[in-house]
Image (cartoon, rainbow, N blue to C red; front, side, top):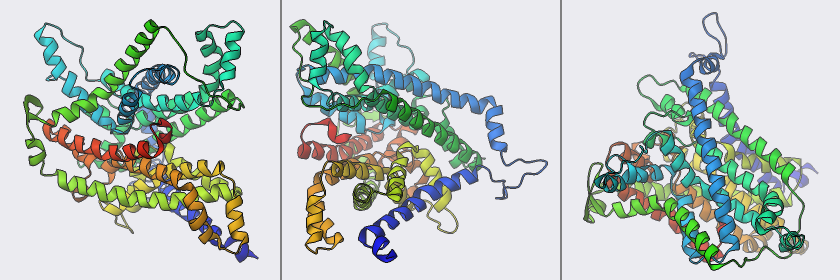
Length: 555
């Protein structure tokens, strides 16, 4: 009976899912927690001169450390607030008003969304830095801008890079609001703004809070942007990176402690958002989605101008990188002469591109194969175990890349695995970090698809495994493809975990861009950055081609 119940095809898949999550997620995070309490000798014994919680005591007693935590909160909360202020009205205007050129707006916002965050910081230095293009133009007419460096520049880059999270979630929420609710509000004498404020906005609060959560978690865990544009402004993520990889007196134990604090903050934010969304949610059925609103020509011009200014400003860094890759440079200076020499002399580009391509393809294949199976069991084999698998498979959403990198390195980098600096350790990190995309895509599709066809196949004597391959997979192919392409795009831009785990022979495109920026080689950085943008864009273009020009494929 046990064999019949638990060791059929899907029982084996369930057990395999548990093993994978336990080995690649629970084990590394547990090792990370334990490492933060270990003594220098690798024990957990307190002495008269040493406490196993010494690093935690040190963190909260030293201004250097707890001020760094406050800095992280400061820039992340500001970026989250500004992202909501920008993302909500832009999404509403695009959804409700016939603004011309919506295809361009979608593409520009998606490009902003999928580009590595630190590329935006680097591009703004090219534009508004001490030798920036715009800075030089304004200085010629006697205008001096405030410095782009420091916390202000970090918040600017974070906001322009992250508001698409709120934009995309807001669009998703608006699609679930029924037109009759707005009509009822207007019939009761409310103004259009009053209806938005009292009827529509409360209904989309859960979606907005999800977008805000993604902004906060993403910015809180980003250290590339502060390192490039912060000029000494410390954040927790950069402190983790510095303590873990510093060859001159770094403290891996302190890095583990800092990682646990980051993990606590991001999980805390997730729990707060869930409670907030639960209290703000309403049960509703959408028969007729919100349609376009007719407004005056003047209002249309104003709305179009606002949207285009915001989108162009957000897209400007990407455009700057591409254009500057074709300009002659000398270190951090742009000469301005058009040339292809940058692409011909970028000697490290082929190796970085090859590494990225191989790692992306292998990691994506694993995510798709295993994520599809997990997505199936959590929907079609509902029980307590699969419910736990479902929850745990979503956990990597809340784990910062640098934290994942440190935990994977501690667990598999040394004895007995010795995977440090190898392609395999990068693949393991990419796989577990991006697994949720396929799981969520497939499970969401299956929730909307009845099991009758599969049951009929099994009743006709076809084994469960064959039924899945011959009947289910063809039906869920759109969801699998959506998850695969989004996984591919996000792995291609992955930086935070890569910079912890890579070695010279496994250097990827994001790491190469970052290294060239830190060395002041802006020309080479632009070339590699352009290749990276193109590499990331390809899966998104395929998504839009297959599923239509609809941002919802990214959700």
